[in-house]
Length: 304
Image 1 (cartoon, rainbow, N blue to C red):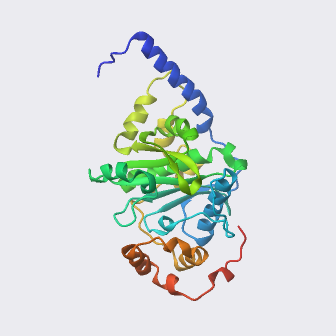
Image 2 (cartoon, helix red, strand yellow):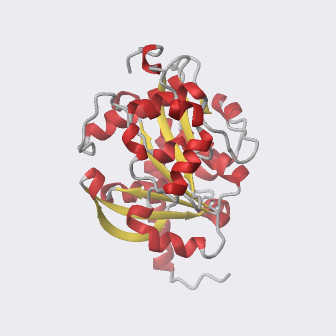
Image 3 (cartoon, rainbow, N blue to C red):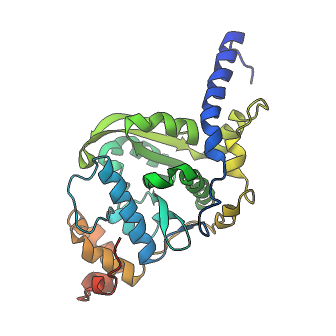
Protein backbone atom coordinates (compact mmCIF):
# COMPACT_ATOMS: atom_id res chain seq x y z
CA UNK A 1 0.00 0.00 0.00
CA UNK A 2 1.39 3.40 -1.00
CA UNK A 3 2.33 5.83 1.77
CA UNK A 4 0.70 9.13 0.80
CA UNK A 5 2.02 11.08 3.77
CA UNK A 6 4.37 13.99 3.23
CA UNK A 7 8.03 13.72 4.20
CA UNK A 8 7.33 15.90 7.25
CA UNK A 9 4.41 13.71 8.34
CA UNK A 10 6.51 10.56 7.97
CA UNK A 11 9.32 12.17 9.97
CA UNK A 12 6.89 13.14 12.73
CA UNK A 13 5.48 9.62 12.83
CA UNK A 14 8.97 8.13 13.09
CA UNK A 15 9.90 10.53 15.89
CA UNK A 16 6.71 9.69 17.78
CA UNK A 17 7.44 5.99 17.47
CA UNK A 18 11.05 6.55 18.54
CA UNK A 19 9.85 8.37 21.68
CA UNK A 20 7.45 5.55 22.48
CA UNK A 21 10.16 2.96 21.96
CA UNK A 22 12.55 4.73 24.29
CA UNK A 23 9.88 4.34 26.97
CA UNK A 24 9.33 0.73 25.94
CA UNK A 25 12.99 -0.24 25.88
CA UNK A 26 13.37 -0.77 29.62
CA UNK A 27 10.13 -2.76 29.75
CA UNK A 28 11.46 -5.63 27.65
CA UNK A 29 14.63 -6.10 29.68
CA UNK A 30 14.89 -9.26 31.72
CA UNK A 31 14.96 -8.18 35.38
CA UNK A 32 14.18 -11.46 37.08
CA UNK A 33 17.66 -12.62 38.09
CA UNK A 34 17.05 -12.05 41.81
CA UNK A 35 13.62 -13.74 41.86
CA UNK A 36 13.66 -17.18 43.49
CA UNK A 37 12.62 -19.76 40.87
CA UNK A 38 10.28 -17.50 38.85
CA UNK A 39 7.36 -19.08 37.02
CA UNK A 40 4.16 -18.09 35.24
CA UNK A 41 1.03 -20.21 35.27
CA UNK A 42 -2.75 -20.20 35.37
CA UNK A 43 -3.91 -20.56 38.97
CA UNK A 44 -5.01 -24.02 40.04
CA UNK A 45 -4.83 -24.15 43.83
CA UNK A 46 -6.67 -22.32 46.56
CA UNK A 47 -3.40 -20.78 47.72
CA UNK A 48 -2.61 -19.38 44.26
CA UNK A 49 -6.09 -17.92 43.83
CA UNK A 50 -6.10 -16.48 47.32
CA UNK A 51 -2.73 -14.79 46.93
CA UNK A 52 -3.75 -13.34 43.56
CA UNK A 53 -7.06 -11.99 44.87
CA UNK A 54 -5.28 -10.51 47.88
CA UNK A 55 -2.77 -8.66 45.68
CA UNK A 56 -5.63 -7.18 43.66
CA UNK A 57 -7.46 -6.12 46.83
CA UNK A 58 -4.38 -4.45 48.31
CA UNK A 59 -3.52 -2.59 45.12
CA UNK A 60 -7.11 -1.47 44.53
CA UNK A 61 -7.34 -0.33 48.13
CA UNK A 62 -4.16 1.72 47.77
CA UNK A 63 -5.71 3.79 44.96
CA UNK A 64 -9.15 4.10 46.53
CA UNK A 65 -11.02 1.55 44.42
CA UNK A 66 -12.30 -0.54 47.35
CA UNK A 67 -15.55 1.14 48.41
CA UNK A 68 -16.77 -1.64 50.70
CA UNK A 69 -13.85 -3.01 52.75
CA UNK A 70 -13.95 -6.72 53.54
CA UNK A 71 -12.06 -8.44 56.33
CA UNK A 72 -10.90 -11.23 54.02
CA UNK A 73 -9.02 -8.68 51.87
CA UNK A 74 -9.75 -10.66 48.71
CA UNK A 75 -11.08 -9.04 45.53
CA UNK A 76 -13.05 -11.37 43.26
CA UNK A 77 -16.52 -11.83 41.80
CA UNK A 78 -18.70 -14.48 40.23
CA UNK A 79 -16.73 -14.34 36.97
CA UNK A 80 -13.65 -15.46 38.93
CA UNK A 81 -15.31 -18.83 39.58
CA UNK A 82 -16.23 -19.62 35.98
CA UNK A 83 -14.34 -22.54 34.41
CA UNK A 84 -13.15 -20.54 31.39
CA UNK A 85 -11.73 -17.74 33.53
CA UNK A 86 -7.92 -17.72 33.73
CA UNK A 87 -6.17 -16.13 36.70
CA UNK A 88 -2.58 -15.80 35.49
CA UNK A 89 0.05 -15.48 38.19
CA UNK A 90 3.74 -14.65 38.23
CA UNK A 91 5.25 -16.63 41.08
CA UNK A 92 8.42 -17.00 43.02
CA UNK A 93 8.96 -20.48 44.43
CA UNK A 94 6.14 -20.03 46.95
CA UNK A 95 4.60 -16.59 46.51
CA UNK A 96 2.43 -14.91 43.89
CA UNK A 97 3.92 -11.50 43.11
CA UNK A 98 1.82 -10.33 40.14
CA UNK A 99 -1.47 -11.30 38.54
CA UNK A 100 -3.73 -10.78 35.53
CA UNK A 101 -7.18 -12.28 34.89
CA UNK A 102 -8.89 -13.15 31.63
CA UNK A 103 -12.67 -13.55 31.60
CA UNK A 104 -13.99 -15.17 28.44
CA UNK A 105 -17.38 -13.99 27.25
CA UNK A 106 -20.35 -16.31 27.70
CA UNK A 107 -24.02 -16.04 26.85
CA UNK A 108 -25.02 -16.72 30.45
CA UNK A 109 -22.63 -14.46 32.38
CA UNK A 110 -21.30 -12.01 29.82
CA UNK A 111 -18.33 -9.87 30.87
CA UNK A 112 -17.69 -7.55 33.83
CA UNK A 113 -17.46 -4.69 31.29
CA UNK A 114 -21.12 -5.20 30.39
CA UNK A 115 -21.86 -2.99 33.39
CA UNK A 116 -20.74 0.01 31.31
CA UNK A 117 -20.33 -1.13 27.73
CA UNK A 118 -22.86 -3.86 26.95
CA UNK A 119 -24.17 -2.11 23.83
CA UNK A 120 -20.69 -1.83 22.34
CA UNK A 121 -19.76 -5.42 23.26
CA UNK A 122 -23.04 -6.70 21.81
CA UNK A 123 -21.94 -5.34 18.43
CA UNK A 124 -18.91 -7.65 18.55
CA UNK A 125 -21.05 -10.57 19.70
CA UNK A 126 -23.44 -10.02 16.81
CA UNK A 127 -20.51 -10.61 14.45
CA UNK A 128 -19.89 -14.02 16.03
CA UNK A 129 -16.56 -12.97 17.52
CA UNK A 130 -14.97 -14.64 20.55
CA UNK A 131 -14.46 -11.86 23.07
CA UNK A 132 -12.41 -11.84 26.26
CA UNK A 133 -11.84 -9.20 28.92
CA UNK A 134 -8.59 -8.56 30.76
CA UNK A 135 -9.06 -7.33 34.32
CA UNK A 136 -7.57 -7.43 37.82
CA UNK A 137 -4.03 -6.60 36.72
CA UNK A 138 -1.99 -5.98 39.85
CA UNK A 139 1.63 -5.92 40.96
CA UNK A 140 2.72 -4.69 44.40
CA UNK A 141 4.79 -1.52 44.23
CA UNK A 142 7.96 -3.26 45.38
CA UNK A 143 7.83 -5.68 42.43
CA UNK A 144 7.08 -3.31 39.57
CA UNK A 145 10.69 -2.72 38.53
CA UNK A 146 10.94 -6.41 37.55
CA UNK A 147 8.67 -5.85 34.50
CA UNK A 148 6.37 -8.62 35.71
CA UNK A 149 3.37 -7.28 33.80
CA UNK A 150 5.27 -7.55 30.52
CA UNK A 151 5.88 -11.26 31.10
CA UNK A 152 2.27 -11.84 32.12
CA UNK A 153 1.18 -10.01 28.97
CA UNK A 154 3.41 -12.22 26.87
CA UNK A 155 1.97 -15.35 28.48
CA UNK A 156 -1.55 -14.11 27.92
CA UNK A 157 -0.99 -13.37 24.23
CA UNK A 158 0.28 -16.93 23.79
CA UNK A 159 -2.83 -18.23 25.53
CA UNK A 160 -5.18 -16.02 23.48
CA UNK A 161 -3.74 -17.48 20.29
CA UNK A 162 -4.37 -21.04 21.47
CA UNK A 163 -7.85 -20.19 22.79
CA UNK A 164 -9.04 -18.62 19.53
CA UNK A 165 -9.76 -15.17 20.96
CA UNK A 166 -10.81 -12.54 18.38
CA UNK A 167 -11.14 -9.46 20.59
CA UNK A 168 -9.40 -8.53 23.83
CA UNK A 169 -11.12 -5.82 25.85
CA UNK A 170 -10.01 -3.90 28.91
CA UNK A 171 -11.52 -1.16 31.05
CA UNK A 172 -8.96 1.27 32.50
CA UNK A 173 -8.76 4.59 34.28
CA UNK A 174 -8.26 7.39 31.70
CA UNK A 175 -4.83 8.20 33.14
CA UNK A 176 -3.58 4.73 32.10
CA UNK A 177 -4.89 4.79 28.52
CA UNK A 178 -1.63 5.96 26.93
CA UNK A 179 0.32 3.13 28.59
CA UNK A 180 -1.96 0.38 27.30
CA UNK A 181 -2.03 1.89 23.83
CA UNK A 182 1.74 2.32 23.61
CA UNK A 183 2.81 -0.97 25.16
CA UNK A 184 0.04 -3.45 24.36
CA UNK A 185 -1.34 -1.82 21.19
CA UNK A 186 -4.86 -1.33 22.54
CA UNK A 187 -7.13 1.00 20.58
CA UNK A 188 -10.15 3.10 21.52
CA UNK A 189 -13.31 1.05 21.95
CA UNK A 190 -15.80 3.00 24.05
CA UNK A 191 -16.06 6.45 25.56
CA UNK A 192 -15.19 7.45 29.11
CA UNK A 193 -17.90 6.67 31.65
CA UNK A 194 -18.14 6.66 35.42
CA UNK A 195 -17.74 3.22 37.01
CA UNK A 196 -19.64 3.27 40.28
CA UNK A 197 -18.14 0.14 41.94
CA UNK A 198 -14.68 1.75 42.11
CA UNK A 199 -15.80 5.38 42.24
CA UNK A 200 -13.71 6.42 39.25
CA UNK A 201 -13.99 7.04 35.49
CA UNK A 202 -13.20 4.27 33.02
CA UNK A 203 -12.42 4.00 29.31
CA UNK A 204 -13.03 0.92 27.16
CA UNK A 205 -10.10 -0.25 25.01
CA UNK A 206 -9.85 -3.07 22.48
CA UNK A 207 -7.31 -5.22 20.67
CA UNK A 208 -8.61 -6.73 17.44
CA UNK A 209 -6.56 -9.85 17.97
CA UNK A 210 -7.13 -11.13 14.44
CA UNK A 211 -4.73 -8.46 13.19
CA UNK A 212 -2.66 -7.95 16.33
CA UNK A 213 0.53 -9.72 15.28
CA UNK A 214 0.61 -8.14 11.83
CA UNK A 215 0.12 -4.70 13.35
CA UNK A 216 2.83 -5.32 15.95
CA UNK A 217 5.25 -6.59 13.31
CA UNK A 218 4.55 -3.59 11.07
CA UNK A 219 5.15 -1.21 13.96
CA UNK A 220 8.58 -2.66 14.69
CA UNK A 221 9.83 -3.48 11.20
CA UNK A 222 12.16 -0.46 10.93
CA UNK A 223 15.72 -1.33 11.86
CA UNK A 224 16.48 2.06 13.38
CA UNK A 225 14.41 1.13 16.42
CA UNK A 226 16.21 -1.09 18.91
CA UNK A 227 13.23 -2.11 21.06
CA UNK A 228 11.22 -4.82 19.34
CA UNK A 229 8.04 -5.70 21.22
CA UNK A 230 6.99 -7.95 18.35
CA UNK A 231 9.93 -10.27 19.01
CA UNK A 232 9.50 -10.00 22.77
CA UNK A 233 5.83 -11.02 22.72
CA UNK A 234 5.96 -13.46 19.79
CA UNK A 235 9.12 -15.49 20.22
CA UNK A 236 9.32 -18.36 22.66
CA UNK A 237 12.58 -19.70 24.14
CA UNK A 238 14.19 -16.26 24.39
CA UNK A 239 13.93 -15.95 28.19
CA UNK A 240 13.99 -18.41 31.12
CA UNK A 241 10.26 -17.84 31.67
CA UNK A 242 9.18 -18.78 28.17
CA UNK A 243 8.99 -22.48 29.01
CA UNK A 244 5.87 -21.65 31.04
CA UNK A 245 4.14 -19.98 28.09
CA UNK A 246 2.86 -22.98 26.16
CA UNK A 247 -0.85 -23.69 26.46
CA UNK A 248 -2.95 -26.50 25.01
CA UNK A 249 -6.04 -24.68 23.85
CA UNK A 250 -8.90 -23.00 25.65
CA UNK A 251 -9.22 -23.57 29.38
CA UNK A 252 -12.49 -24.98 30.72
CA UNK A 253 -11.67 -26.21 34.22
CA UNK A 254 -13.70 -25.33 37.33
CA UNK A 255 -12.08 -24.69 40.69
CA UNK A 256 -11.57 -27.73 42.86
CA UNK A 257 -13.78 -28.31 45.90
CA UNK A 258 -11.49 -26.60 48.41
CA UNK A 259 -11.10 -23.42 46.36
CA UNK A 260 -14.78 -23.20 45.44
CA UNK A 261 -15.94 -23.86 48.99
CA UNK A 262 -13.50 -21.31 50.40
CA UNK A 263 -14.50 -18.46 48.08
CA UNK A 264 -18.23 -19.19 48.27
CA UNK A 265 -18.01 -19.29 52.06
CA UNK A 266 -15.87 -16.16 52.27
CA UNK A 267 -18.01 -13.99 49.99
CA UNK A 268 -21.52 -15.53 49.73
CA UNK A 269 -22.86 -12.16 48.57
CA UNK A 270 -21.44 -12.75 45.07
CA UNK A 271 -24.40 -15.09 44.50
CA UNK A 272 -27.04 -12.50 45.35
CA UNK A 273 -27.14 -10.79 41.97
CA UNK A 274 -27.45 -14.01 39.95
CA UNK A 275 -30.59 -14.79 38.00
CA UNK A 276 -32.16 -18.25 38.07
CA UNK A 277 -30.19 -19.66 35.14
CA UNK A 278 -26.91 -18.33 36.45
CA UNK A 279 -27.51 -19.75 39.92
CA UNK A 280 -28.46 -23.12 38.44
CA UNK A 281 -25.18 -23.17 36.49
CA UNK A 282 -23.11 -22.41 39.59
CA UNK A 283 -25.06 -24.95 41.63
CA UNK A 284 -24.48 -27.68 39.05
CA UNK A 285 -20.80 -26.79 38.78
CA UNK A 286 -20.10 -26.48 42.50
CA UNK A 287 -22.99 -28.39 44.10
CA UNK A 288 -20.90 -29.97 46.86
CA UNK A 289 -19.04 -26.76 47.67
CA UNK A 290 -22.21 -24.68 47.62
CA UNK A 291 -24.21 -26.90 49.95
CA UNK A 292 -21.44 -28.13 52.24
CA UNK A 293 -21.64 -27.24 55.92
CA UNK A 294 -17.87 -27.47 56.30
CA UNK A 295 -16.09 -24.43 57.68
CA UNK A 296 -13.24 -24.83 55.25
CA UNK A 297 -11.52 -21.68 56.45
CA UNK A 298 -10.53 -23.60 59.57
CA UNK A 299 -8.39 -25.83 57.35
CA UNK A 300 -6.79 -22.90 55.57
CA UNK A 301 -5.83 -20.46 58.26
CA UNK A 302 -2.80 -19.19 56.37
CA UNK A 303 -2.85 -15.42 56.46
CA UNK A 304 -2.78 -13.40 53.24
